Length: 486
Image (cartoon, rainbow, N blue to C red; front, side, top):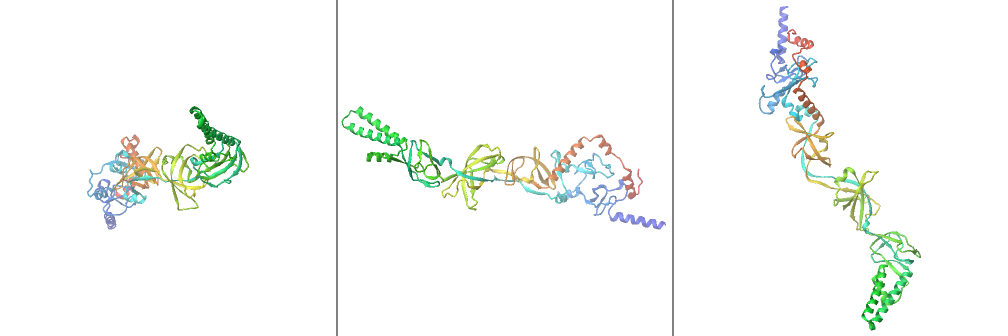
């Protein structure tokens, strides 16, 4: 019997030393400084070799303090890392200023000061955890920023190149020279011949005044001749006012014959887009006869949404592409932005002018419009997916290196091409997180809140964090250490 007890004792000692675990009492256990591996649930259980915790069976993890020391090229000591507070491994909301046990009977684990980076809410995460949660980073860029506004436009006439043709006298149309809509006309081209008693009387009056002046020039005094010439000029001016050309008046002076009809000529070059006169029609003074539009330049109207209005300025370059001619781009400029919105579509109308020498842009066509405004020549930009929008604040997570992350509040400008313009808060070259930043931000906020709670712990927390021992934990410890519970 005595031999059997000796053999069991030797086996227990062998297992303890093989696993590198001290199975003595709590006061005899080595500290974390002496080993390289420890239990994540029981920090006082350490080992120089990988293995499992004899209390809870969890695999040992490498000591974090020692890893950081190797990463910084130095060794750790008890004075290098300051413990800020202690927390329960299964309940992060349970914290204490002194080591002890949680209400669940687990040993509290330390939270070091360098893990909670001040009031800024920073956080330090193990590199393995960084990899597991899929953290990706990007460098803050400093580059020109622009945005392309795409919309659909409608081709229309240039209103400044449209002319209405009418007469200033009453009469009857004797002959039409331009007799269908869409006909192209040149400036000065005959449009129609009109018979008007008023025009006939005006011609006769002009010829009479002309003959009177010629007779008086040989015998009358200077004053009489001057009066006759004034009458002649008044008659001639009346013909001009009725759109009789100088060439027609010269022909009248040469032939000395009154013409029964007078010809009206086109005031501009273009296309007849409306015709309201026919052969034999009786027309009144001021009645609309033709409408002529010059299509060498056309307007294109486009609807812009409210959030795109700040991007559009008069003078910006615009491009259009027609559906029946893909790949051929025509360029123009923004000429006007209407000062009101459509109440139904909540859009503002923008007008652009485009040259149209080939008449390829036809009124009432639809065209794909693209406007490329430039916001700023050099702007600090960040990807849109890197920004955390939390109501009134816009936050990004900075990668400080060595697993340290820090939230940074930004003042954002415009959004363009998948990036935000940063007005304040970042500078070019800094590294930010573009993936899994929500997890880091939540961890940062939690640790910042816990750090604030430690400054003034409540009375309940102080009592719970004292030397309170739980019978279940003591029984479990006694089963391995051989010491009876106190």
